Amino acid sequence: MQTQINQTTLDLIQGDITQQETDAIVNAANSSLLGGGGVDGAIHRAAGPGLLAECSQLGGCRAGDAKITKGYNLKAKYVIHGVGPVYNSKDPNIPKLLASVYQRNLEIATEHQLESIAFPAISTGVYGYPMQEAAEISLKTVIDFLQQNTQIKLVRFVLFTAEALNVFEDTLARLI
Ligand code: ADP
Image (cartoon, rainbow, N blue to C red; front, top):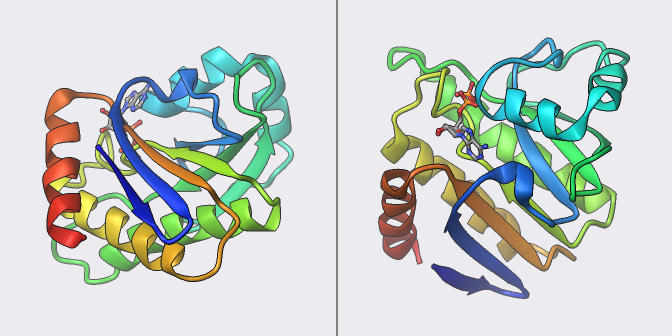
């Protein structure tokens, strides 16, 4: 599913984020930035050891924030490592942290004058965020950002399963 938000195409697909040819791919990192399972493990495997070497110089990253590195053996030139929150339904700060990590990724992409960026569904794996709630927050934050001025021409969500893609598509259809 594709839609246009001002000058930017917002694209939802099912796939593997490590295969994307966008200027940057976003990693669902943990705060150590030293690798992990899920998307993080897949990105480090595909990028090769140079990525971990650069990440180990960054001093970690707080939840809600993001840091950029080169893409090494990936097709993408950059990886932006975004640290999502661990889900906790009782903590009112958690949705703000999830919104913040998307916002920071887009700000960093803007600072580096990138034209395309691909996101996974941050926090919806090991970090336990329910897909529906995560889709709402993620899509709203991206749409709000794209309604401001941006040079970014393509924002793609790469959902790992058909089910996740369905949830994102239904949510996007309601939001636009
Ligand atoms: P987190 O720790 O932020 O929850 P995970 O990597 O565990 O991050 O999962 C985030 C989401 O990414 C999950 O929905 C998971 O199914 C999905 N995912 C796992 N591997 C890939 C991949 N190679 N490409 C895109 N999405 C992926």
